[in-house]
Image 1 (spheres, rainbow, N blue to C red):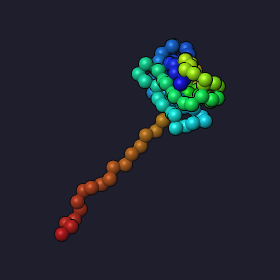
Image 2: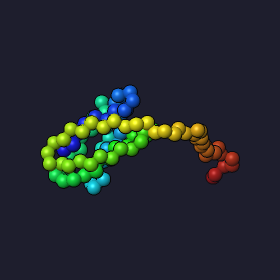
Image 3: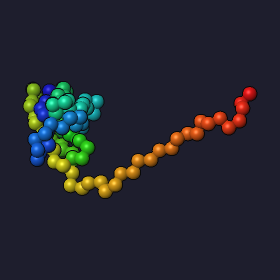
Image 4: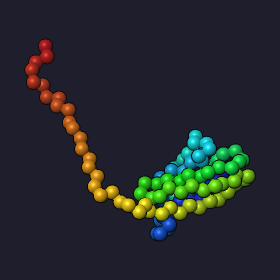
Length: 101
């Protein structure tokens, strides 16, 4: 098992809902909890831990699981920011225009 907390490298703030997975066993993916804590259980072996969070650079760490490991992770904010986000939608016209009988 590997566990730890995920934090912002600059502020130390816990990152809630960060995605954590082992690349070799993607079915073991989880999200960090409200304290930034994560815990992934897998059989002994060599793995790559991938941690991602929106607005941050992903981080991958080599992990040798031979027992329980504590591995804190600090993510750096992504260098670029979005210039503009456009959200659009259309509404279906359900008005009756003629009798249907």
